[in-house]
Amino acid sequence: MAGLYIHIPFCKRICAYCDFFREAGTARMEPLAEAMHRELDRQRAYLGGEPVRTRYFGGGTPSLCPPELLERLLEHAARNFDCTQVEETTLEANPDDLTPPYLDALRRIGIDRLSIGIQSFDDDCLRLMNRRHNAAQAREAVRNAQRAGFENITVDLIFGVPGFGGDSLRNSLDCALGLGVQHISAYHLTIEPGTAFGRKAARGEFAPVDEAVSEAEYALVHETLTKAGFEHYEVSNFARPGFRARHNAAYWHGVKYLGIGPAAHSFDGRERHWNVPSVERYIEGTPPETELLSDRDRFNEYVMTRLRTAEGIDTHEAEALFGTERIARLRQNAEPWIRAGALRNDSARMAIPPERMLVSDAVIEDLFET
Image (cartoon, rainbow, N blue to C red):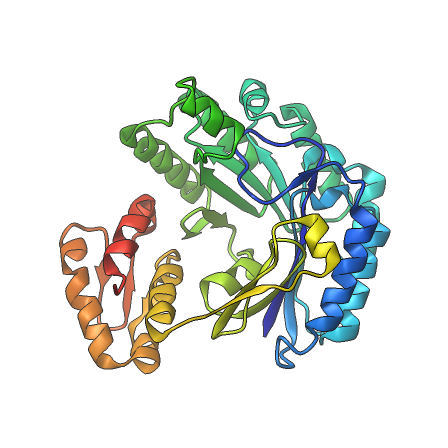
């Protein structure tokens, strides 16, 4: 089984924290869609005949796309790949795009999961992040989606925003839970150099929260959502039973996936491919770059992706893939983290406890082969 990712880079407004490839305005929407059709044709053999299990429109802001454009892309993909076994088709959306007519059209063309970028239910925090919706619009968007018949909705939240922890974060978590959504993604704010926050930080006008605050807010997110019945199944992801993000699981479990669109990445099990991060050059047909992963690269990627999940590393599977000697070294290198309680290890599995996943990057980096 495989995944298909389609990157829609257009945004009406650039958020203060966003480091993804994106472009303000939608003037080149149709030329980009035509270039995506051509890429789908060129890449028809990429997945080796494996059926597509998940389809995902990411961005940018895919909800800026007319439903007819999304439908044409899905239909074109189905002419090149076996999409008869699709289990999940996700669209990332901004709350203020989700009008009842638009939602009805999304349902009609086969979108069955929405990922709504709410980020906060605090209007002051939303203004700081330069979001184009307010908390009332966010709540109404989710209710509109539910009335339209969507039964698989995830909302994104951001924590670690200076000045918006404590009661503000609790309120956002409570609002998300009160809406009865099936999935919540909670990401720690990172301040990247090319963003508005990054430029403010360079001028000394904005600073990240300290480590103690990060840990306290992460603990609040974990405890609030797990007590409400959500599984904390990946560093930043929480789901009601049966509603884990199937597409994202492809990235964490080494499943093949094809990325279409500017800056989109693909992985066929041995090689990684990525498209040029430019709408203009992508439309012109600039070919993707390619990286062949060495055995060490594949091992490090396996460690990185598996340890981001609650299940962690299946050590029997790891030995079959990489050999008993390599996994013995991994166990030996993991001992200090096991003693510190940041890793759990038994004969069959090695995993980071979900409540300790905030330190996952440090653990994973220490276990990499160099």
